[in-house]
Amino acid sequence: MNLSWQTLLAVGSGGFLGAILRFYTAFHIAKIFPHQIPLATLSVNIIGSFLIGILAAIFMTFTPSNELRAFLITGFLGALTTYSTFALETYFLLNSSIYFAIVNILLNVIGTIFSVAIGYKLCLYFLR
Image (cartoon, rainbow, N blue to C red; front, side):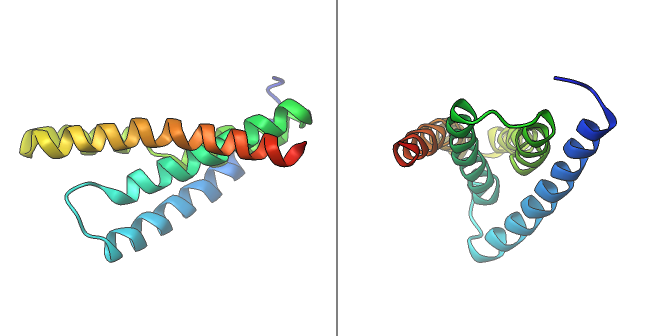
């Protein structure tokens, strides 16, 4: 990948939009579903994983520009998904409830892998 100012701008712009969407989503999900398991983080991780599965399938068929790939995957989805937040929340859950920490880990890991697979397979199905 070429490291040009256009690529950097694409990553930054995508990151800006992904971070805003993550904050907005987390704020509203936490208000609607207060729970021991951080459902807001789980939701954006599953949604982001689904979207990256779709993009992987599309990018295998159509080759995007470096800037578009940087905008969508590195910028937007990188800011939308929250692995570092997941790690911090799980750490705090481990200190208060090993049960909820394990449930959170399993839901995030299995849920995101499953979402990638669904997004990828669905997109390949519709691209044919």
